[in-house]
Length: 410
Image (cartoon, rainbow, N blue to C red):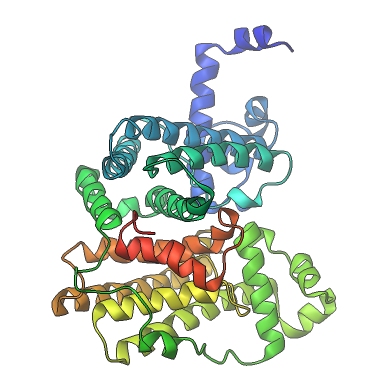
């Protein structure tokens, strides 16, 4: 069918129904993940049969691509407006404000749902190439918001890391926006912008390793080496392919063992995935509690834990599990894992409150700042996509420092 014939078929009724499908699909994919959602789930949201959905989108992957491309288009519109500001600070503020205003419109039903990008990496060919191309173009547009002069080879690495930080933390607000009333979104955007631009430190607080960093360098003993290997392999696969993509076959292949060996060491996949969460919780909790008991300011403690966790991501013992994977979990364990994630987040809030009380952290919205710290640690899982030569040490300087010292720091 040629384009002219196709254009004639897009009647107002067809366009309205397609828009309803995209809106419902984005909601379903956000709630259940790409692997966990079905066309039948989407069809039930809009009162259609599954066969009717395939009239618009033949495969689930086609629908995923359409949802993601529409989200990218919406974000590009926000970037276009932000790019008109004359300074980096102005562009960052306008980008975050514009995105939150889009979220407010979405919450009020004025515009359609945007789909998150947490499942970006699990699509297969040729859908992955199409989405990665569009996402990379969007990433480059965000990068221009941070450019102060000509991009040189020697500053491109830092610029890429900081662009990933800005884009990921801003878009990540889709996952936690419901904690706030849409009437407060402008205020949340202003406070988030203030944190990203100004960092967390008081002028007297210095960036750099402390004795707490040395104490955190010793990871907790995770027990049996064979089981630890299964946990590390499963964690890496969940980060790459999502909960549903991390199959028994793939985990076994990653370790070059048989399925029989897998089941000899693990009752089932679900128990192993649950243990992956517990492993990441244990490592994070271990570092938090050591820092809390150590001598030092709130600034020293929150910086050291953040550095320690990001170093762990890129160490031989890593990675940690991306916390956003909780949304794909079965219903019977999802709430339990989310509660554990919230408990870890509360400890970050405690460090920030301590820092404001002892004068090492400037006054700011500690709940929002803790969300950004957690989001930064989570986003470091895929930092290597934008900074190919990333290591445990340069990740700290390129990615952690800009959040704590301000996004223009390098």
